Each structure stands twice: as C-alpha cells, then as structure tokens.
Image 1 (cartoon, one colour):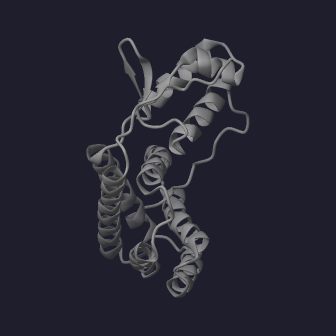
Image 2 (cartoon, rainbow, N blue to C red):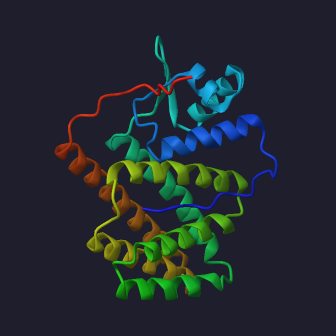
Image 3 (cartoon, helix red, strand yellow):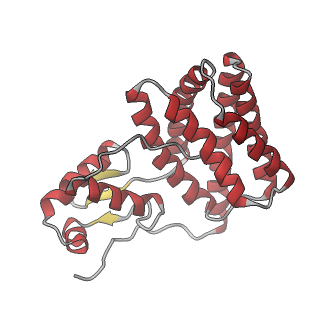
Amino acid sequence: MSSLAQPKRRKILSLSDQLVDAIKEKIVNNEYAPGSVLQIDVLAAEHDVSTTPVREALLRLMGEGFVSFMRNKGAIVADIDDAVISDVYEYRSLLEEHAAVHACSLDLPEIREIEHDMVLLAKHLHDFNLYQKTDNALHDLLASVEPNSIIQESLYKLKSQSTRLRNFAERTPFPESDVKEINGEHLEIARAIKSKDAPRAKRAIATHLENSKNRTIDALTRNTDTQDAFHPSEVSHKR
C-alpha cells in the first residue's frame, strides 16, 4: 500500500481548487467518513464562501470518485467496500505497470538510494517512518518519470484514493510482519528497475499491488468484524 507523486500544480489555486483540496483531505483522512452527508450550506459556512463554489468542488470530487449524489440527501462521501478496493488497485496496477516499464528505460540514480533505505528497513522493521519514506519514494519516482501526462494525473488522483482506503481499513500502523512483506515486494520492484529488466518490473508491480489489494480487504474485514456497524452521520458543525 502506497503513495503516489502529485504532479506540478498551479502556484495560485482558484477558490474551487482550494475547496476541492480541503474537502478531499478530510475525506482521505476519514474526518468525513464513508456515508457521511456533506451539507453544502454547512461547508460554505465552514470555509466562509458562498454555496456556488462548494457545489462546484463537490461535483469535481464526484468525478474523482470521492463523492456521490443521492436524491433527497445531496452529497454523500463515497462508500468503501471490497469492490471499491478491487477497482482502485486494478486501475492502479495498469498505470503503474506502464510507468515501471518506462522507468526501466531510464538512468535513475534515485533508485539506488531507495534500495539502500529498503535494505536498512529490513533490519529495522519497527521504523514506520522509514517504511513510509521508502514507500512514498518508490511510487513517487514511478509517477514522476511517467511521460504520459494523462496517466500521471490519474496516478495523482489514485494516490488520494489509495491513501483513503488504507487509512480506513488499517486505522493503525502495519504490524512488522506486513512491513517485512511489503518491503520485500518494494525491493523486488526497485531491483528490477535498477537492472532495467522491464518484464521483471512489470511482474513485480502486478504482484505487489495484488497483494496490497488483498491486505487492504483483509484489514477492512478484520475491522468490520471487531467493530460495531458504521452508522452514516452528517457533517453538522454549527454555523
């Protein structure tokens, strides 16, 4: 499970861009939980804006798969279930395999530093900060070298989706056994790219993301089994 690089953004964000980023961040961090009703007037009051840019932001978030609209309810934070997890990881695998193959055609000195940190992590599996550093570095590198701007933008959007799924399913840092498994998968990807072995890199990415999907589904199942059923709530901060 992992993070992906954000492509270069405009230095000055429009009001709509700022609202999209602010609302998305709360969805990704599950401050606005799956099934929550996002009341347009409440969000407008929170951000001290009119309702028009809030509606625009929610429509954009619907296009990215974070929000849906229901009759008589309005905007709802998108649900998370096995099907959603599978769809995100299947799409991500297609795009990252493409990026990994391209990476194998380049000279990437960064991959050696990433590999070095992964070898260090294998000896310090309790170091969750180092795990996050290696995870982000590898997948950010793949996104940054992707030559197709449409694929790169899709990878950016999938970064937020994947982080949301992970945050909701896991709730806590991974156990060392998971860190060991994930780090081993990352090492295989890094070494395939370093050796410029495109078929090996493509297989390694596919295996890693299939395993990541299964780990996320398993974590979601464990949390569902051990917690009370989630009851959708409204975002209801007072004006």
